[in-house]
Amino acid sequence: MSADALLDPLFLDAVDPAVRDLRTLREDLVTAPTPLQPLDRLRAELGGGPRLWVKRDDLTGLALGGNKARKLEYLLADARAQRADVLVTVGAAQSNHARQTAAAAAKAGLEAVLVLRVPPGSTPEYTGSGNVLLDRILGAQVVLVEETSDDPHPERAAADAVVAQLRADGLRPYLIPSGGSTPVGALGYLESYAEIAASEQRFTEIVVATGSAGTQAGLVAAQALLGGDARIHGVAVSPDVAELAEAVDTISAGTLAFFGRGPADDAWVDGAHVGAAYGALTEGGVEAIRLFARTEGILLDPVYTGKAAAALIAGVRSGAYGEDDDVLFVHTGGSPALFAHAPALGEAFAG
Image 1 (cartoon, one colour):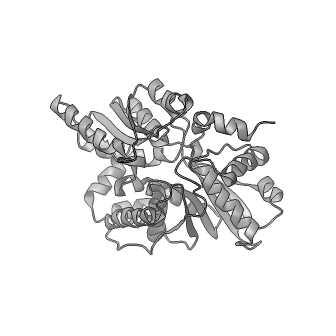
Image 2 (cartoon, rainbow, N blue to C red):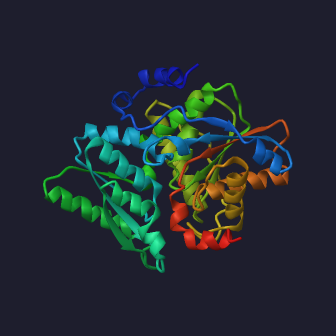
Image 3 (cartoon, rainbow, N blue to C red):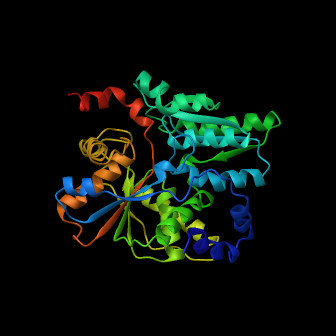
């Protein structure tokens, strides 16, 4: 059965008619279904254990790919329904979501303003290469605001000011929260989960990076709607693990409410692989980048997928899975951030 065949009855029967409209209006941004591939050489390198797989959502196709394109299909449809002419979003300077928002706006003929936070002491590579460079190539207006100890998220107030000014100028901005992580955005991960469910392969566990919570929330909501018993293992990429778990629960509940369903069970968010801070390199993350690259030719990033893959590798090594288990890693993209972290990664991979 195809992913569309699984999903269409849900949308036809959705309690909220606006959701049916969004399904109809959603923008075609994703090359789907994305591949589902075995990781046999990685498994061998780790000495056996469970069968390992990867869902290649780094290959969604929009401006170097990534998970955010799935969310943006619905968010852009919502923006169109509200007659918006400017997309505004927020995030860290190297936000993959901001890059894909810039690309989605360009494809849709809309303007984009990206309000991005910069930590103190950032390198020129961090503020000028990787995703920031791509944002500018894609034609977005980039507004960089510096973090302080008093305000670790200055982009939020700055974005509100941008939206107010755009409205004063007679424009109709559509503000997208960090990561596109809203109940509407999470609808995009019903699509990805449906592709997984439509395959013949059944999984014991699904491992995914959890940053702004929307991707895991979409998978949780999709499982509640479509069935399946795989453990959804969210791997935190920032230290506020309890807040991330709460955000997954809140967003997934909002998505399920569109279909007249109650909340799902509490989400599992694993905080063991965060490291010192969001964006900080970890030993496990660097090893995961090396192993995926040199066994499978797959590039991970140090902020999201490297940490999630470190959790997968740790689970294999600790015996958390049986040899008859099938474990799926959802690759959410992010390779442009490799260039932004070039100084530290260059040292880690020297020689």
